[in-house]
Image (cartoon, rainbow over all chains, first blue to last red; front, side, top):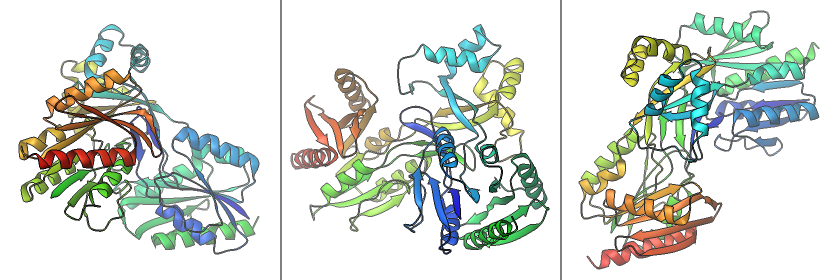
Length: 242
Length: 242
């Protein structure tokens, strides 16, 4: 079977030298790829960034991207060319991308003259500028970001029959809140599984995660290797019932 | 002689999972360290980030930092413990660091009630929140950034006798503008040299740079290796006249 794994974190340009990045080492994606590749029947397309750690196995097909836009177009391309038994979407994708940047003085002057649709008014203001690197000659800089498309929602649109494993990372929340947010994400994105995890419970190889399925069953794992093994087993089990 | 080299780019936290990063591969800093280390009389403290490429030479002392604040405290510490013949500050340092983040709706409500000192009013608003990860349930997010201290200005304050090599990177500007901005940086930061370069003239090992000194002399180089060699020669020449 052929599977698609995404890993690492996207990076969104502010200007030619600055970007907003989503921290994600790519280690969990690497562990997942290595777990699947112990099965010689599996071939893997691996979508990641230059900065992330990469699986050592040479038998996978590596595709490097940078921004959420890159991710979207590469994913559309791969999912048009190939049929995947499963898509494991562990990449941390920016919810927002920089739309415009102004100094606080510029923002104040936009507010004074055109207070209704601020995002649009600020964008208009920046279009009159010529510099490619934002001036640093101000005390406060303001970056306005706009929503990115939800990449995970593309997956079942493009291939309704693929097994989709999504990921939900929260920061230092009660376990019940984590599981309930993960269930909502499962419904909204038509995922078959969501791996729910909390940044406060990740350090090095130690990685606490809950794998939730469509029947509200939850399985627990405590390291990246355990999570990778669990995802592989559950995906293969579901694949066999199809 | 003992020298301090900084390389790579700082990264400033927006929240627990997002950051603003300055793109810098660290390749030029690596080339500079390797040029100096061909001289067995030279020992190098190397201040960089985990993401940057690292020099292979094991004889240097590596110090890893992440944010501009880390850089400042580590630099103060090293420059208190050691006397450096030269400091070569090639690290791309964020001019700004995130101060607060709000949804556009929150910003509009702050503007309506408290329009005078927006930066402060927004900061106050965010302090009433409890989430550690910013909500993505909005069309536009607004990040307000405040100015970072100028790290380069610390160097001559701490060690007036060290030879300071600063760097100025602009994006796609005429050569005369680049040189004039570099001269201003040389004056303002009491640097002995500024390496002026333009992102539009950097790709792979090809790297066009101008090294400007206090007598307004300009020397040119065309690759990272040439720049590294030029900096090493000029620093050693100046050191010998002291």
